[in-house]
Image (cartoon, rainbow, N blue to C red; front, side):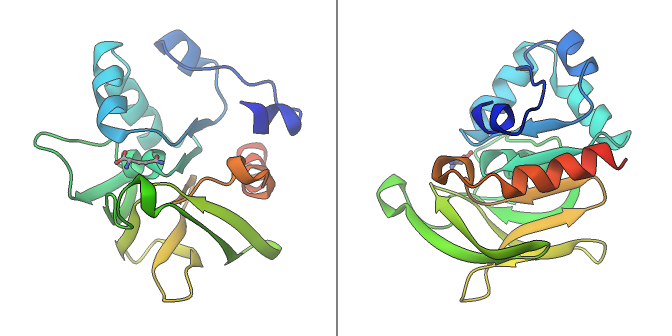
Length: 177
Ligand code: GLN
């Protein structure tokens, strides 16, 4: 919300279907994907979000949000499901636990100069389908940023390092739709 405020966006937090229906785009932030699933189910938001993604709503998923967008996950808990939409396989907690968090400078397609990224128990993108564009990789080749149509997904948190350019990229996706 703070990043969107810095970019001058009229943003709202989505907890109800009526709020979802007001949105031109949706950002699913970091956090904990299993909790997001449970809350989305409890608030009757799971199917509406899944359906909105299928209908072409632009959605940006960061970290746990990327997990929620992935069609396939590894290391999920029993019964874990995602909204899906991105033809990728992600591996949860691929970098280890909270203490293994790290920051890195990344090249990111469409953005000039390095993106400073914070990785906090993030997922790695293990496999991508043929329609998925790879936007960013770590130096060892692991994929940490992808786009497929109206969906944008990254493994890390740009907002905690004050990096707003990926959010800006997403806004361009929303406004050029
Ligand atoms: N490990 C979390 C999950 O599986 C994601 C962590 C994060 O979003 N920073 O959902």
